Length: 310
Image 1 (cartoon, rainbow, N blue to C red):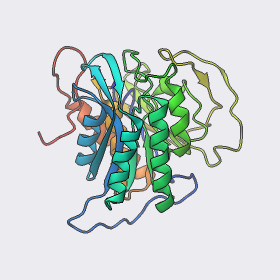
Image 2: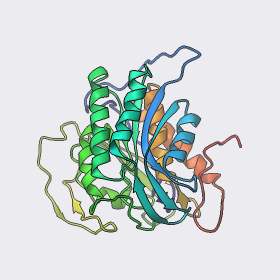
Image 3: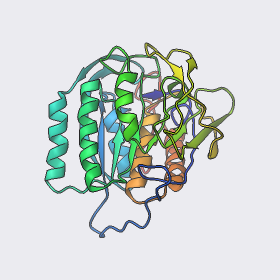
Image 4: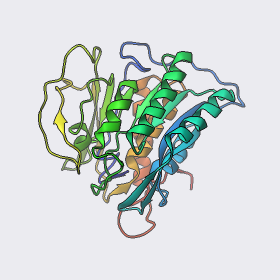
Protein backbone atom coordinates (compact mmCIF):
# COMPACT_ATOMS: atom_id res chain seq x y z
CA UNK A 1 0.00 0.00 0.00
CA UNK A 2 2.96 2.27 -0.29
CA UNK A 3 5.52 3.30 -2.83
CA UNK A 4 8.98 4.64 -2.84
CA UNK A 5 9.19 6.83 -5.86
CA UNK A 6 6.30 7.78 -8.03
CA UNK A 7 3.30 5.91 -9.33
CA UNK A 8 3.99 3.04 -6.92
CA UNK A 9 7.48 2.50 -8.01
CA UNK A 10 7.03 4.18 -11.29
CA UNK A 11 4.89 6.00 -13.72
CA UNK A 12 4.14 4.65 -17.10
CA UNK A 13 1.13 4.06 -19.12
CA UNK A 14 -0.06 2.09 -21.96
CA UNK A 15 -3.12 1.29 -23.78
CA UNK A 16 -4.88 -0.32 -26.60
CA UNK A 17 -7.52 -2.91 -26.19
CA UNK A 18 -9.68 -2.84 -23.11
CA UNK A 19 -12.25 -4.97 -21.43
CA UNK A 20 -11.83 -8.47 -20.07
CA UNK A 21 -10.34 -10.27 -23.03
CA UNK A 22 -7.38 -9.02 -24.99
CA UNK A 23 -8.43 -8.45 -28.53
CA UNK A 24 -11.89 -7.30 -27.55
CA UNK A 25 -12.64 -3.73 -28.40
CA UNK A 26 -12.01 -1.04 -25.84
CA UNK A 27 -15.00 0.53 -24.13
CA UNK A 28 -16.04 3.48 -26.18
CA UNK A 29 -18.88 5.89 -26.36
CA UNK A 30 -20.52 5.23 -23.01
CA UNK A 31 -23.15 7.85 -22.49
CA UNK A 32 -24.52 8.82 -19.10
CA UNK A 33 -27.41 11.13 -18.29
CA UNK A 34 -26.27 14.45 -16.88
CA UNK A 35 -27.51 13.39 -13.43
CA UNK A 36 -25.77 9.97 -13.49
CA UNK A 37 -22.21 8.86 -12.76
CA UNK A 38 -20.55 5.56 -13.65
CA UNK A 39 -19.85 3.40 -10.59
CA UNK A 40 -16.76 1.39 -9.66
CA UNK A 41 -17.14 -1.54 -7.27
CA UNK A 42 -14.10 -1.53 -4.98
CA UNK A 43 -12.75 -4.34 -2.80
CA UNK A 44 -9.86 -3.20 -0.59
CA UNK A 45 -8.54 -2.97 2.95
CA UNK A 46 -9.10 -0.10 5.37
CA UNK A 47 -5.99 1.93 6.20
CA UNK A 48 -6.40 4.08 9.36
CA UNK A 49 -3.88 6.60 8.03
CA UNK A 50 -6.17 7.35 5.09
CA UNK A 51 -3.21 7.25 2.74
CA UNK A 52 -3.78 3.92 1.04
CA UNK A 53 -6.41 1.21 0.68
CA UNK A 54 -10.05 1.95 0.25
CA UNK A 55 -9.80 5.59 1.38
CA UNK A 56 -7.33 6.23 -1.44
CA UNK A 57 -9.57 4.41 -3.90
CA UNK A 58 -12.62 6.48 -3.01
CA UNK A 59 -10.76 9.75 -3.41
CA UNK A 60 -9.08 8.80 -6.69
CA UNK A 61 -12.24 7.39 -8.27
CA UNK A 62 -14.22 10.48 -7.35
CA UNK A 63 -11.50 12.80 -8.67
CA UNK A 64 -11.58 10.91 -11.98
CA UNK A 65 -15.28 11.31 -12.62
CA UNK A 66 -16.78 8.10 -11.23
CA UNK A 67 -18.51 6.96 -8.06
CA UNK A 68 -16.91 4.41 -5.71
CA UNK A 69 -18.89 1.53 -4.22
CA UNK A 70 -16.51 0.59 -1.38
CA UNK A 71 -16.49 -2.85 0.24
CA UNK A 72 -13.91 -3.29 3.00
CA UNK A 73 -12.14 -6.64 2.87
CA UNK A 74 -9.77 -6.25 5.81
CA UNK A 75 -9.09 -3.94 8.75
CA UNK A 76 -5.44 -3.06 9.10
CA UNK A 77 -3.33 -1.75 11.95
CA UNK A 78 -0.98 0.65 10.22
CA UNK A 79 0.31 4.17 9.90
CA UNK A 80 1.77 5.99 6.91
CA UNK A 81 4.95 3.88 7.10
CA UNK A 82 4.30 0.37 8.42
CA UNK A 83 1.61 -2.29 8.66
CA UNK A 84 1.43 -3.84 12.12
CA UNK A 85 -1.54 -6.16 11.76
CA UNK A 86 -4.50 -7.24 9.63
CA UNK A 87 -7.94 -8.64 10.43
CA UNK A 88 -10.05 -9.94 7.55
CA UNK A 89 -13.75 -9.25 7.16
CA UNK A 90 -15.90 -12.37 6.90
CA UNK A 91 -16.10 -13.58 3.30
CA UNK A 92 -19.86 -14.12 3.45
CA UNK A 93 -20.38 -10.52 4.56
CA UNK A 94 -18.26 -9.22 1.69
CA UNK A 95 -20.34 -11.18 -0.80
CA UNK A 96 -23.63 -10.07 0.79
CA UNK A 97 -22.62 -6.42 0.52
CA UNK A 98 -21.84 -6.74 -3.16
CA UNK A 99 -25.00 -8.71 -3.88
CA UNK A 100 -27.10 -6.06 -2.14
CA UNK A 101 -25.76 -3.43 -4.51
CA UNK A 102 -26.38 -5.57 -7.56
CA UNK A 103 -29.82 -6.68 -6.45
CA UNK A 104 -30.67 -3.07 -5.59
CA UNK A 105 -30.20 -2.08 -9.21
CA UNK A 106 -26.85 -0.29 -8.96
CA UNK A 107 -25.18 -0.24 -12.38
CA UNK A 108 -21.53 -1.28 -12.03
CA UNK A 109 -19.24 -0.10 -14.81
CA UNK A 110 -15.86 -1.33 -13.51
CA UNK A 111 -14.31 -3.22 -10.59
CA UNK A 112 -11.12 -2.28 -8.72
CA UNK A 113 -9.41 -4.98 -6.64
CA UNK A 114 -6.99 -4.27 -3.82
CA UNK A 115 -6.04 -6.44 -0.85
CA UNK A 116 -8.61 -9.22 -0.20
CA UNK A 117 -6.80 -10.36 2.95
CA UNK A 118 -7.04 -14.11 2.39
CA UNK A 119 -8.05 -16.78 -0.10
CA UNK A 120 -11.60 -17.10 1.26
CA UNK A 121 -12.25 -13.43 0.54
CA UNK A 122 -10.68 -13.77 -2.88
CA UNK A 123 -13.05 -16.62 -3.71
CA UNK A 124 -16.03 -14.52 -2.56
CA UNK A 125 -14.89 -11.62 -4.76
CA UNK A 126 -14.38 -13.99 -7.68
CA UNK A 127 -17.97 -15.20 -7.34
CA UNK A 128 -19.22 -11.61 -7.42
CA UNK A 129 -17.21 -10.80 -10.54
CA UNK A 130 -18.36 -13.98 -12.26
CA UNK A 131 -21.96 -13.01 -11.51
CA UNK A 132 -21.42 -9.49 -12.85
CA UNK A 133 -19.79 -10.81 -16.01
CA UNK A 134 -22.93 -12.79 -16.81
CA UNK A 135 -24.63 -9.42 -17.29
CA UNK A 136 -21.64 -7.61 -18.79
CA UNK A 137 -19.03 -10.03 -20.21
CA UNK A 138 -16.61 -7.18 -20.89
CA UNK A 139 -16.81 -5.57 -17.46
CA UNK A 140 -13.36 -4.02 -16.79
CA UNK A 141 -11.56 -5.36 -13.71
CA UNK A 142 -8.41 -3.58 -12.51
CA UNK A 143 -6.24 -5.58 -10.10
CA UNK A 144 -3.66 -3.89 -7.88
CA UNK A 145 -1.54 -6.86 -6.73
CA UNK A 146 -0.44 -5.49 -3.35
CA UNK A 147 1.51 -8.42 -1.94
CA UNK A 148 3.23 -6.49 0.85
CA UNK A 149 3.64 -2.94 2.08
CA UNK A 150 6.52 -0.81 0.87
CA UNK A 151 8.38 -1.84 4.03
CA UNK A 152 7.76 -5.53 3.31
CA UNK A 153 4.97 -5.98 5.88
CA UNK A 154 2.50 -8.78 5.13
CA UNK A 155 -0.93 -7.85 3.81
CA UNK A 156 -2.48 -11.31 3.87
CA UNK A 157 -3.48 -13.84 6.51
CA UNK A 158 -2.43 -16.67 4.22
CA UNK A 159 1.07 -18.09 4.43
CA UNK A 160 1.76 -16.92 0.91
CA UNK A 161 0.21 -13.71 -0.40
CA UNK A 162 0.25 -15.07 -3.94
CA UNK A 163 -2.41 -17.62 -2.96
CA UNK A 164 -5.20 -15.06 -3.29
CA UNK A 165 -3.57 -13.46 -6.31
CA UNK A 166 -3.83 -16.64 -8.37
CA UNK A 167 -7.57 -16.76 -7.65
CA UNK A 168 -8.23 -13.25 -8.96
CA UNK A 169 -5.70 -12.83 -11.77
CA UNK A 170 -7.70 -14.84 -14.34
CA UNK A 171 -10.60 -12.41 -13.86
CA UNK A 172 -8.56 -9.23 -14.33
CA UNK A 173 -8.56 -7.05 -17.42
CA UNK A 174 -5.34 -5.41 -16.32
CA UNK A 175 -2.97 -5.75 -13.36
CA UNK A 176 -0.69 -2.97 -12.14
CA UNK A 177 2.32 -4.53 -10.38
CA UNK A 178 5.44 -2.63 -9.49
CA UNK A 179 8.73 -4.25 -10.49
CA UNK A 180 9.15 -6.46 -7.37
CA UNK A 181 5.50 -7.57 -7.58
CA UNK A 182 5.92 -8.37 -11.27
CA UNK A 183 8.60 -10.91 -10.31
CA UNK A 184 6.61 -12.46 -7.47
CA UNK A 185 3.84 -14.17 -9.43
CA UNK A 186 2.86 -15.58 -12.80
CA UNK A 187 0.79 -12.97 -14.64
CA UNK A 188 0.36 -14.93 -17.87
CA UNK A 189 -3.43 -15.19 -17.37
CA UNK A 190 -3.88 -11.40 -17.48
CA UNK A 191 -4.40 -9.79 -20.89
CA UNK A 192 -2.76 -6.50 -19.86
CA UNK A 193 -0.02 -5.51 -17.43
CA UNK A 194 1.14 -2.05 -16.46
CA UNK A 195 4.48 -2.60 -14.73
CA UNK A 196 5.53 0.52 -12.83
CA UNK A 197 9.21 1.28 -12.45
CA UNK A 198 9.57 3.41 -9.35
CA UNK A 199 11.66 0.84 -7.50
CA UNK A 200 14.49 1.26 -9.99
CA UNK A 201 17.23 3.87 -9.72
CA UNK A 202 17.83 7.01 -11.72
CA UNK A 203 16.09 10.32 -12.38
CA UNK A 204 13.50 8.83 -14.72
CA UNK A 205 10.81 6.26 -14.08
CA UNK A 206 9.62 4.00 -16.87
CA UNK A 207 6.21 2.35 -16.80
CA UNK A 208 5.64 -0.38 -19.33
CA UNK A 209 2.36 -1.63 -20.71
CA UNK A 210 2.40 -5.25 -21.92
CA UNK A 211 -0.51 -6.73 -23.85
CA UNK A 212 -0.88 -10.47 -24.32
CA UNK A 213 -3.17 -11.27 -27.21
CA UNK A 214 -3.11 -14.98 -26.35
CA UNK A 215 -2.27 -15.12 -22.66
CA UNK A 216 -2.97 -18.85 -22.26
CA UNK A 217 -1.36 -20.17 -25.44
CA UNK A 218 1.96 -20.98 -23.82
CA UNK A 219 2.83 -22.33 -20.42
CA UNK A 220 5.19 -19.91 -18.66
CA UNK A 221 8.83 -20.87 -18.35
CA UNK A 222 9.79 -20.29 -14.75
CA UNK A 223 13.07 -19.63 -12.99
CA UNK A 224 14.10 -18.69 -9.45
CA UNK A 225 13.66 -15.02 -8.56
CA UNK A 226 14.14 -12.74 -5.58
CA UNK A 227 11.70 -13.08 -2.70
CA UNK A 228 9.20 -10.35 -1.94
CA UNK A 229 8.77 -10.42 1.81
CA UNK A 230 7.51 -13.92 2.63
CA UNK A 231 6.12 -14.49 -0.85
CA UNK A 232 7.64 -17.35 -2.85
CA UNK A 233 8.62 -15.73 -6.12
CA UNK A 234 9.02 -17.02 -9.65
CA UNK A 235 9.58 -15.34 -12.95
CA UNK A 236 6.95 -15.99 -15.62
CA UNK A 237 7.84 -16.11 -19.26
CA UNK A 238 8.72 -12.69 -20.59
CA UNK A 239 5.68 -10.87 -21.96
CA UNK A 240 7.89 -9.57 -24.75
CA UNK A 241 8.50 -5.98 -25.74
CA UNK A 242 6.16 -3.50 -24.10
CA UNK A 243 3.31 -2.22 -26.21
CA UNK A 244 4.02 1.24 -24.90
CA UNK A 245 6.40 2.82 -22.40
CA UNK A 246 5.86 6.03 -20.47
CA UNK A 247 8.62 8.09 -18.93
CA UNK A 248 8.10 10.23 -15.82
CA UNK A 249 10.51 12.35 -13.78
CA UNK A 250 11.28 10.82 -10.41
CA UNK A 251 9.91 12.88 -7.55
CA UNK A 252 11.72 13.35 -4.25
CA UNK A 253 10.47 11.45 -1.22
CA UNK A 254 8.44 8.28 -0.83
CA UNK A 255 4.68 7.95 -1.00
CA UNK A 256 1.97 6.01 0.78
CA UNK A 257 -0.86 4.88 -1.49
CA UNK A 258 0.50 5.75 -4.91
CA UNK A 259 -0.27 2.29 -6.31
CA UNK A 260 -3.84 2.42 -5.02
CA UNK A 261 -4.23 5.85 -6.59
CA UNK A 262 -3.03 4.67 -9.98
CA UNK A 263 -5.15 1.51 -10.15
CA UNK A 264 -8.29 3.28 -8.90
CA UNK A 265 -7.79 6.04 -11.45
CA UNK A 266 -7.54 3.49 -14.25
CA UNK A 267 -10.75 1.82 -13.06
CA UNK A 268 -12.58 5.16 -13.01
CA UNK A 269 -11.44 6.02 -16.52
CA UNK A 270 -12.52 2.61 -17.85
CA UNK A 271 -15.86 2.98 -16.09
CA UNK A 272 -16.33 6.25 -17.96
CA UNK A 273 -15.79 4.41 -21.22
CA UNK A 274 -12.27 5.46 -22.14
CA UNK A 275 -10.20 3.08 -24.29
CA UNK A 276 -7.49 1.38 -22.26
CA UNK A 277 -4.58 3.39 -23.66
CA UNK A 278 -6.34 6.66 -22.88
CA UNK A 279 -7.30 5.40 -19.43
CA UNK A 280 -3.68 4.48 -18.63
CA UNK A 281 -2.38 7.80 -19.84
CA UNK A 282 -4.98 9.82 -17.93
CA UNK A 283 -4.50 7.80 -14.74
CA UNK A 284 -0.74 8.18 -14.78
CA UNK A 285 -0.92 11.90 -15.44
CA UNK A 286 -3.34 12.33 -12.55
CA UNK A 287 -1.29 10.14 -10.20
CA UNK A 288 1.93 11.98 -10.98
CA UNK A 289 0.20 15.26 -10.17
CA UNK A 290 -1.07 13.90 -6.84
CA UNK A 291 2.47 12.86 -5.92
CA UNK A 292 3.97 16.18 -6.99
CA UNK A 293 1.59 17.87 -4.55
CA UNK A 294 1.83 15.23 -1.79
CA UNK A 295 1.67 16.29 1.85
CA UNK A 296 2.84 14.97 5.21
CA UNK A 297 0.75 13.78 8.14
CA UNK A 298 3.84 12.82 10.13
CA UNK A 299 7.41 11.67 9.64
CA UNK A 300 8.07 9.32 6.76
CA UNK A 301 6.01 8.69 3.67
CA UNK A 302 3.94 11.42 2.05
CA UNK A 303 0.24 11.21 1.18
CA UNK A 304 -0.78 11.84 -2.44
CA UNK A 305 -3.00 14.92 -2.75
CA UNK A 306 -5.81 13.20 -4.60
CA UNK A 307 -8.19 16.15 -4.20
CA UNK A 308 -6.06 18.41 -6.35
CA UNK A 309 -8.24 21.47 -5.89
CA UNK A 310 -7.43 21.64 -2.15
